[in-house]
Image 1 (cartoon, rainbow, N blue to C red):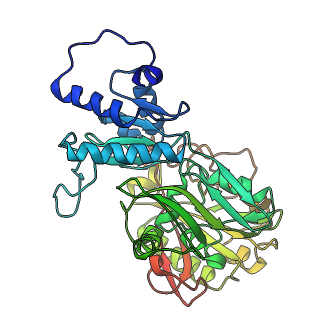
Image 2 (tube, rainbow, N blue to C red; image 1 turned 180 degrees about the vertical axis):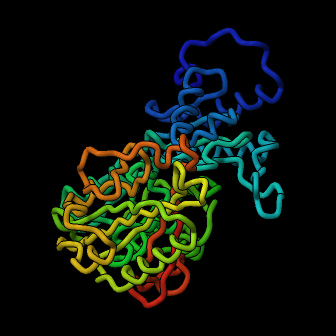
Image 3 (spheres, one colour; image 1 turned 90 degrees about the horizontal axis):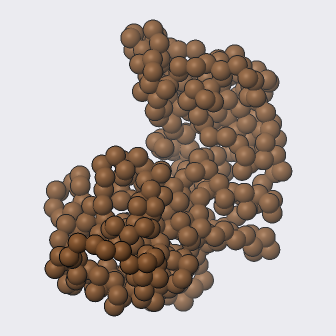
Length: 416
């Protein structure tokens, strides 16, 4: 089985006792991996390629040269079952002595699991030393049921692919705003342009399939006959806790979306100091809270570049969006000191990410689509940090993880 996925056998140094035990475990537990999947040990051709795929969205994985003992690329749910049972057997045999360490855990104890999951997007901990890597790049399917108004996604899919599939049927699911983020973000909450009207992403989850540590598959969801364990999993996997199992598919409720929606972008001139920026943010919040439910105002904040950086200057960008097919309200446009030329229309799935980076940024008087750029803002070359913070004023009821009424009176400020 190893020769099948790794290619012709190469001469290698005599294996250590631990490596021999690992290869024996691979042979005994992963021989049934599908031909489309991949099982990669260190120093085999597919190993570095798998790490590169995982690290492409997380530079720290490559920069720190993290080396998992095994890298797995499942292509089917049955592969995931084998992978989980493989890790469990390795725990029983003591093959992952360092895999339980969670760097930066609050109590500093070895309380982790020797398994990391990498979806299609980015993750700080998707590759770790001593922990088996499962990379879901070969499980990235997205299917839409227009009659049932649902979208089903595999763990390696990206939000952009899901939004595109739904939009093709006139539907949309509340998700984050960055198309390159993996769908794993959905189970952690998920906030985006539809949050005011339809709540968090996790509130749209209607079904999922989960592989638990014993290698059993559990079908969970609304209207499903579930036992006590499965009811707990259904609750826990929707934002309550991590490491309860490996989710192999998620089905979300979709809703109709207009063929094109109105959205805008306005990057203000640098504010001289934090106090002035804070005053502007308070004014923006007042406008955002008064918006109709279908209109949302997202905000990005970044340290100013150039001479303004030395004075503690701040840059602010606002990104209003009306998701009901109507225009961004005129009073919102005026209140944010925008003009009609700052606003355009696009398909929901094509609305760009709220970027303040120099490749995308226009000067503070331009409209979307202008070719004039403002180089040097936010790329780090002029003293700025190139990493804006963003947030949305999204009315929810109580803590974001337990939100049940999207348009209740309180609000949550969520970093992204």
